[in-house]
Length: 275
Image (cartoon, rainbow, N blue to C red; front, side, top):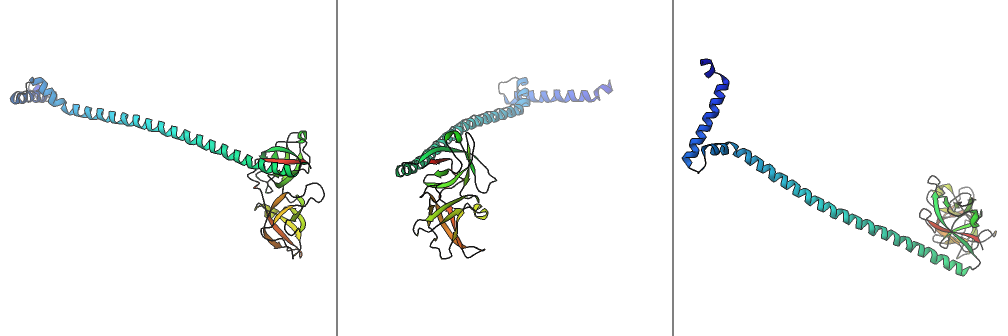
């Protein structure tokens, strides 16, 4: 029997009962109108209620923020959609403006040269490894395209047809070392020819070669096709002179020419099929 009272389990039970009894006496003393049992239980569980309330408040706060964030994200998505729509409209406007400028110059060229026959084409492929910037167009032999036909952008010569297939063609640009066309400077009338150069091609330029050391061609001069040989008509603009340099191999000089059209930006062009 003595061992029972010394048992740890007995001591624990006795401590709990004593705690409950003290709680009941305190509740009766302060007279809150509660039963002793409820007061004790309330005393014991009060911290748990406090913790539960804090957790509940925290959950409400988190879900409130999530709801607010969802609304913000919805508004942000809406604004992004509007921005994308405006960008698309701006791109369409720029494309239309570019096409209008292209057709305006084309019609002017056509009015001044009623015998010219053109075929409109789109650029459908480029060779990114080609320093001469050759490209493929959407028209070919079935459209009357022939090797050697001049390829124009607005009023400018940008190259000639190099290879023809039934429904597409490859354009050799004015930067190519194998490109060659008679040309003249519009003020002095000095005549020579324009061709490509590997070093200049990397800078997006070509040259008017075989000029005398005393040439009248100078910085800013405009170079146009001379029409000699009959393969390309006279008066198509090739570009403007950015420098005149002496040749290292002889006493002649050459003019460095920046093409009038940016070959990397061209998406549409015209092929002169007859003139």
